[in-house]
Length: 158
Image (cartoon, rainbow, N blue to C red; front, side):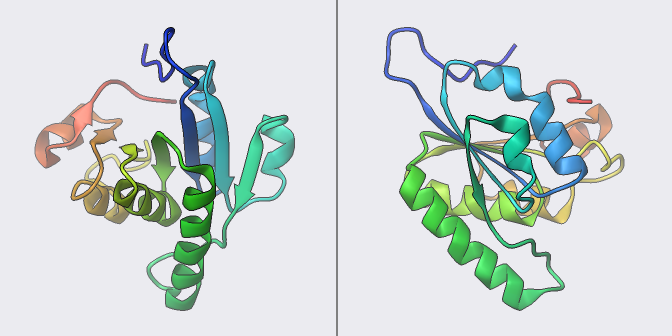
């Protein structure tokens, strides 16, 4: 199993980013990986705070490629979040906000992982394809999609 903490070093600061719905559900399935880290979450849904308490939850506006102004606002909010948290690692299960956080975090030297949604059975999502250009690791939850796109396959979250 993947682990993000190191036994002989200070706790890693991890920023886990996902929009709502299935993206958030898949991120929640990864919670055991975050044990032993200084975990921060970023999402669009304020009710998520109750799910991950006492961890810190940062909110950003929900946006997609069809809502350009909201995308700009989300990028600004995520830039503030990334600068404040200063994560060592950013991991996202999507969608647009996850890609934006990874893009910003790479500018600050963070390691990044993008896990494409299990719903994308035939090709990577738009965010997944964009993340391939900047993320350290892009994972598909489907072996066929990984083989066809150059993403990695290490199993499914769900």
